Length: 146
Image (tube, rainbow, N blue to C red; front, side):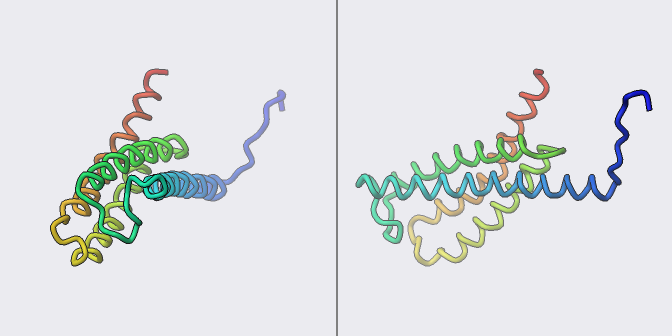
């Protein structure tokens, strides 16, 4: 056969492998973002900067938490786009939509306990799609400059 290998994979096998890689990309980014966010919360509490996680945080610390969660969202979306087998922007935006849903549900669940601080859960929900887009866009720019 002229020294060439034949591709013996069937279309369903290729789709199955891509689906698996898509799931791994999404999970890796989501876990990275969540662990980084909660880990930073815990670190701030441990070093005495923030109160316990179940206590009310002052607005200036919620602003800080918003900033680092946005940064972690950008990084997580970049990782998702980097690991995605195809359509990196689509993968990152799917994670953004999932983040929007979870953030909205969290805002609704905590609405009565965040009186005077409703801006925080609303801001978290509103930043999920833009951070997902920006993280994936960074990856697309990287791919196009090669």
